[in-house]
Image 1: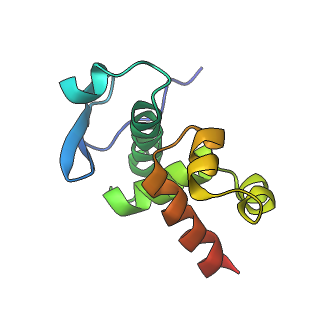
Image 2: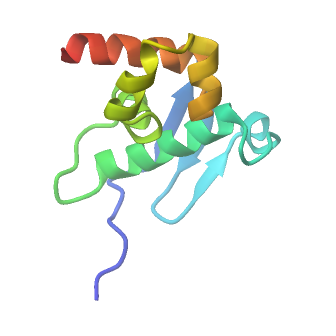
Image 3: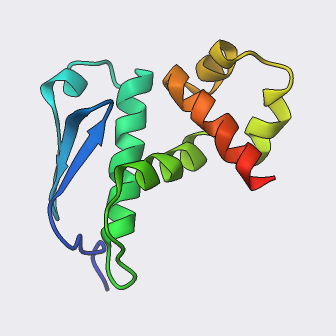
Amino acid sequence: MTGPPLVARDLLVRYGGEVVAVVTQHHALLAPSIAALEADHPRRRFVAALILAGREMTAEPAAEPYDDDQAQFYARILLMPNDEFESLAGRLHDVELAEHFNVPLEQVRAKREDVRLDS
């Protein structure tokens, strides 16, 4: 039986220009500004997705260096799957998409760019 993948090193997760979490092999500690938000708050959900992405990025055996921008890209895929996003993006405004996916508004704009570059 194997345990969880090992994180190569402690991670400082940044979002919006601030450290929002510290991730160790066994724990993820949210910054007070994030921990104070309700569990389903878009910003807190996005930070949780960043933590998952960061752990996956740095886990052995295929560890890669942690990068905030790359982690945000992976978090957008997790929270806004491409197929669903693309089917709604032409009909809904960014605010409506942010509400639908329960993500920060600026991440909808970034996701539009992601799918545009992927086309």
